[in-house]
Length: 114
Length: 114
Image 1 (spheres, each protein chain N blue to C red):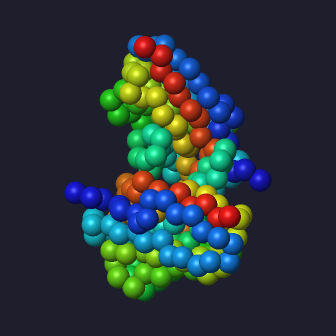
Image 2: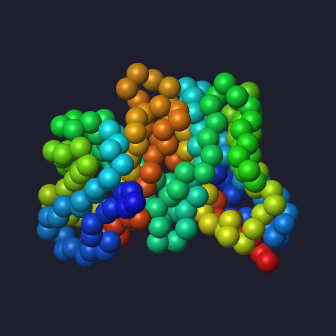
């Protein structure tokens, strides 16, 4: 059982380039999330989705866009990468938002922007 | 302003002894608290949680205590094992309509010395 899979695992971009991070889950979860983690910081929520076709902003949404065209996939896009977006990005999913439905995380994508 | 604080960046404990990781929060609207464990190059994994209506939850070697009046929770690991060496994140959920967001602390790195 793969759980939450993130693609790619590593990427180096130049300032101004665009890219899309892919998150796929095989647990039939309704909710999916994108977080970033910076050195010495906790995880901060970028965007999330409570179902196919829905998205919502989290704590730090600026500079990112997301799409949830299929229930199992949640895409995070950077239209014009900036050095401040250098971070480790984690995707997570959960069955719902209830208290007995914790989020399951992927192993992260390490993104460096030069 | 940090709403979830883990004031100890690191903690070292002898194998077999008790590990106590602490977490403080400022938002009285948090209704659900979780602990996640993270190994290097992996995503966080859910460890244990507690609802704000309880003051203790136990799962094997792991116990979480919640003191609502002090806005403080702690994770106890007894006995500590070398495999417990990881970064532990405290997270809290805000009780509000449509709120599925978790707020994370910065983490505490636990080292269990054999």
